[in-house]
Length: 289
Image (tube, rainbow, N blue to C red; front, side, top):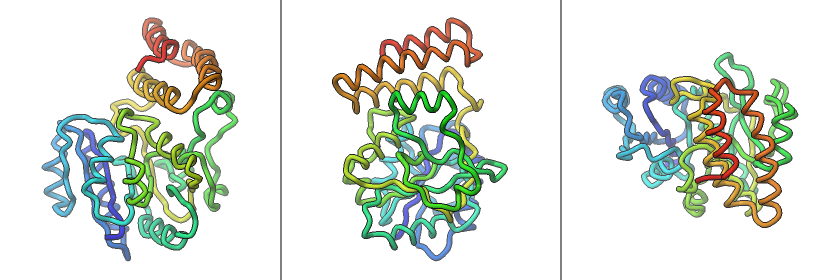
């Protein structure tokens, strides 16, 4: 088996069906399997997908165990040389999986940790495809708009990045297993950041490559896109854990103080109620788990 495609599903029945349709339509010249890990969906996803795609391996996690742990579970059933961790709210526009496989096979002499594509939005324009490791400097750069979406010209080149977004991660299964996959303590958000930070500490590169064309619709498992309080709390909880895990001594305290100052922006940039804003900021201030 060349590639095991792992997709985590949580009440994204139609998005998942659309994603699978493009996988089976576009993927050629590579031996692959599709593994769906379902996090206790209540929208009838299982029957709907099994009727339409009987070859898909369907794994019920039994509960909503989060994005990272669900991918780890899927990887246990994977038999491919590579695992391709793909969001359910994606659509393949070309033979992306074969392109990833061929690139990985042709660059085995390099210390590549993970590959990703230049993702596209629903209008097929460049979308968020990678990020910078969290720290005070990068938080300020984000705040001031220094980091912008890629241009169409950017998407024709290969780029070494801090981390590839978790929407499309192509990793050798041996490496994923060796690193114990995603940190099981992270429910959602920053799990891909943490994994790729650990890769960087091993001297392994993370690359966004031209060729594979994938639309990422983003936020498909949430009823409303955008920064809701629920999403902020989930993301900030993971950020807090990432900070405690990867920063130490004076570096930790400096970044914690800077985070408290930067997150004051939620009082002017969100449309939450004042009590919700204080609830969110309290999470930042005390770095609760």
